[in-house]
Image 1: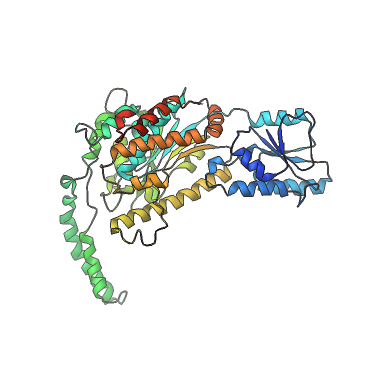
Image 2: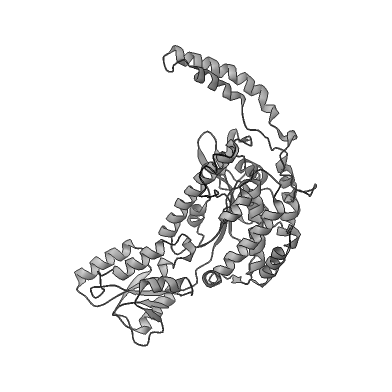
Length: 485
């Protein structure tokens, strides 16, 4: 326990005490505390809530939200005071969403209240895997391979809830179906001719759509002429040429890509039916015309085969054609959501493991993106929109649900250089998988003081010995391969 106070004291309370909120922040970045007491009231210099607000302000500046001390584990310590003054302070404490308050307690009362805060929750665990193209699939499997080695008493196949979007839909559907991670890596290895073929080539070009697109050009031109005649639009060269854009649709069709997934899910002990899975799996896609996010696996859309839902979730424009399901067209789930962490909380999850590889590459070099291709800039724009949206969702979740533990894995900017190549390329399989494993280990090692106790509350023991040995092999290899994992 950490006790931040200027004047207040509690005899016989076993707690580390400090009077400086900056020192308190530093200590929470070094040591795990099960709770924190902060003095509030008229005796605090700078105002009744000065210590608390200063601590929360500096805490909020940490960009890594999971390094921040949890607000629901903060207790305000109030001295005796007139009821109107106390009520005014309690109102302000409620706005700050901390864990609670105590008035002039003794050590026994403090320990009893902390015992209530620390009571192990009824654990409900969720895996949320975001999009990121083929390279995102590689990254997410590398992360999960490391977590499988680092979690004792728990497997990545044991989550209660699985949420996947785009690349994350591929990964979460395999893991929820208890396909072993070693096999997952073999299946998506581009050198494995018998596995899940993610490579897009000439045979995958969406040529079947061309006759319909050619016919649609005439319709677009007629509609344009009618709008001009009615005075709704001016006749212009750019207006006429824009009607020809109907000729150009998504480049590839991936109807054959999901057949291997369907074959895997048809194996004994697995299923292509959400309703028979035994786990709650939700695959996010976008209704292309209603512009709504759809969670396949929910009642009403749980009859859709898992493999078909995955195909819809990963149909990212302009690369892949949209997918028809029950007469409606669906496209990549990332269009409407980056992750489903808020939905996971609404479903009762209080431990969320998030993997999001879809982050933009950041550089201070002027003109860096301008010198790249249109496709490069388009993908970076997609990633920027997706990550900005994720940041808002994560901030809202942490603010509204401080009791929920989230452990997130996002690529560092250095790792993003490896992921910044063509997102539908299969060229960097081994480097991405091995570096994703290594970066996950390093995050777990760096945050073990915080993650270890929080995971233990959910029955998961964090052990890093196996992962450390594998990372040593990766670091010692001039060209590490996925077989090392």
